[in-house]
Amino acid sequence: TESCLGAIEGSGALNAFVHKTPEIAMERARAADERLQTGDAPAMCGLPIGIKDLFCTKGVPGQAGSRILQGFVPEYESTVTQNLADAGAVMLGKLNMDEFAMGSSNETSVYGNAVNPWRRSGDDAQLTPGGSSGGSAAAVAADLCLAATGTDTGGSIRQPAAFTGTVGVKPTYGRCSRWGIVAFACSLDQAGPMTKSVRDSAIMLGAMAGHDPKDSTSADLAVPDFEGMLTGDIKGKTIGIPREYRMEGMPAEIEKLWSDGADMLRDAGAKIVDISLPHTKYALPVYYVLAPAEASSNLARYDGVRYGHRAKLAQGDGINEMYEKTRAEGFGHEVQRRAMIGTYVLSAGFYDAYYNRARKVRTLIKRDFETVFADGVDAILAPATPSAAFGLGEMKDADPVQMYLNDVFTVTVNLAGLPGVTVPTGLDGQGLPLGLQVIGRPWEEGEMLNAAFALE
Ligand code: GLN
Image (cartoon, rainbow, N blue to C red; front, side, top):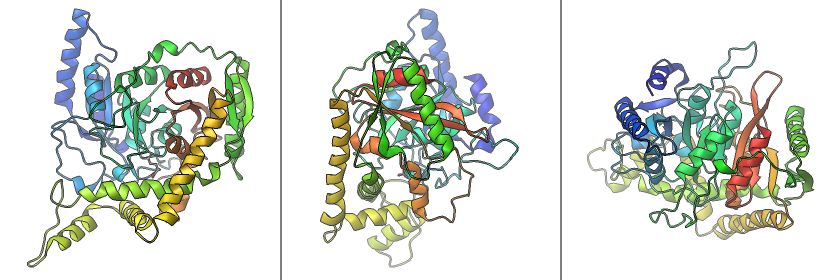
């Protein structure tokens, strides 16, 4: 813990930790020492970790990367961070992220962007660590902590993991409680671990997961021993390669990474089969209707009264002016854009054409996966991202849809409620890490992690 706190002190240039909690860390580290002495050491006893700013942690400021939550100090602890504390993990502080988890580069954060510790060979340009869990990815990659929490609504754990050479897991929807995590899109959000290795992810997921009566979508299922399932033995398993993920214009190095990954699994004794997920092409548009719709509803609670920031009002301003001014000052552009899209697709005249249509297509996307799993596929191998980390500021003037295209391989998993893991498997021509994604059957994170383990 002391060595991590020291590393964090010297890591300002990465802008990964946005609130440090050294007192809490040292207190928990001492308690962990005592537990280790008495031989009663839980799974993560004394392990120093970072927490994405989206998780409420009692008495520690949390802003979800937004100005509108300036000054907000939660009076409660999220279930996931409580579970981690109960497992002995030591919180070092809160990590940078895109505002309300909306983004793929950590550039929508009120704190300014986090920076990827990786550089292209022979080039000093700063790169994005990805988003929205960019601070978590940067901190783990730069050894500021042993692991971090992330959240994934459309790829926010798996994409930054791919950009930083780390492992990131999006569990089955309902595996980890959402209670106490600032909501983005409730039917898609899941918390998960971001770590240096598949084994670390298995241990940390076990500590985070579990049924929680405070979240009605949390599954009442026992948490398996994920670490114990990492045998590396995948003989006889069927791994599907979805042909629709072979997108036009896919860079040759991603294609090679993907086929090398399939070869590795085949060499380890798995059966590699070609599969079809025919509704894949609708996933991005469906996600960018449903996620903003749910977000616009969730963002309605930021009204200048209940939490955080309130704009200065002029004489004679009423409640509508208070909402307008507070939200205009408190929400960044991307959040405002999502609120407008969401309100539009939910509005009386357009609800059927957009929101309801998207929900129906979501069901078709989910059925695509159910069909291949029913045909005997144990896990699916796909790219995690269409490219390696891109430069900070590179997408600034681009059409927002360009940024949304980053999520092309990840959003299907959230729409279908499935588990997915990114595992680093290679470098691009400029020395940057690239990751592959393993998608598992629902509730079979253990098998999925074991396939990822075989790729590591
Ligand atoms: N990049 C996606 C978005 O901006 C996903 C974000 C996430 O998973 N939280 O919505």
